[in-house]
Length: 213
Image (cartoon, rainbow, N blue to C red; front, side):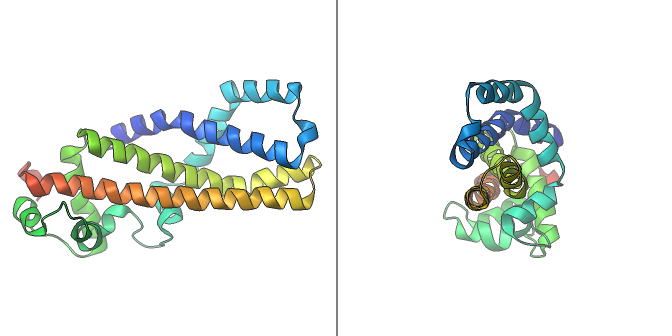
């Protein structure tokens, strides 16, 4: 999964950079419009091309997969979406026949870590499926957007305040970033659920490699 996950994250980098540019530009225009001139545009253009991708990678690289999942699902223990694959998400998906799924993949675990481990094995068998790959990419993108937004909540308003923006304007920018974080986390939850269910829907309709048992 690591190689495919890295490829999907690399494909998402441009969207993360675009979001960071949008956040910075919107914040400056709102909180400190006097700073937004042709010189600022030139600096941002150079930063976008050379510096910002590195900054974005550093920010999202500071947290582990599980730490990012905690930011998305607001759970300390077993936050990964696969941890509730067979007890919560699959039974709620109309596409998935639980009896057929159990027949094709074997015993369905109920303990969170066992569920995630089982789901991961099933994912490995179908990760080349277009629908699975697409929802996985969306999950990673929204998850990293949520993580990046959380880092920007203190950083961007503080930078604006030091640059001369008012405390109120900086606070409004911070509030907007909080809303962006919440929206990204919700998007990641929906995509994570869809990823889990897409994998199980395939296994419910076709018997794959017995190695997943």
